[in-house]
Amino acid sequence: MRMVPSTVLLVEPHTDSAAMFAEVLQWAGFRVETTSAAEASRSYPPRQAPPDIVVVGLRCCTGPALRVLSGGRAVPAIAITSDPRDTDQADALGYASVLLRPVDPSLLISEVRRVVRCASRRSSPGAA
Image (cartoon, rainbow, N blue to C red; front, side, top):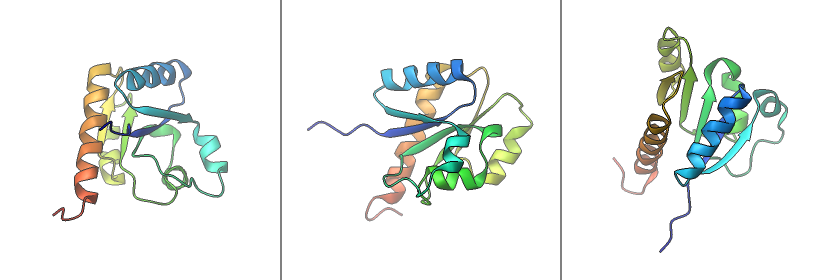
C-alpha cells in the first residue's frame, strides 16, 4: 500500500532558499506548497486542509500568520534563522525545531521527517 506523502508548507522570504528547500523536500518524497507571509496574512478563510508541517523563515512570519497558514489548527513548525540568538525566541513560541542558516539539506529532510513522525504519533488513537 502506497502512503500519501506528508504536506510541507514552506514560508521562506528568500526566493533562492525557498526554491532549494522545495526541491530538496520534494526529492525526499514530501508534497511541498509554498507561500509568502504576506499571502498568508491575507488568506481568508483559513486553509481547509492543514499541512502536516510548516517550515518557516522565523523573522518573516508571526504567530497570527502561522494560525492562518495552519487553518487555526495546531500544526508543528520548524523555524529557519540566520541568528543563533533566535533559538530561545523560537523555543518560547513553540517551534518544534530551529535550523540555522546555511541549512544543510540532509538536516532539513531529517528534521522534517522527525517532526512529522512525532506529530503523527501524538495524534494517533491510543497515543500517550
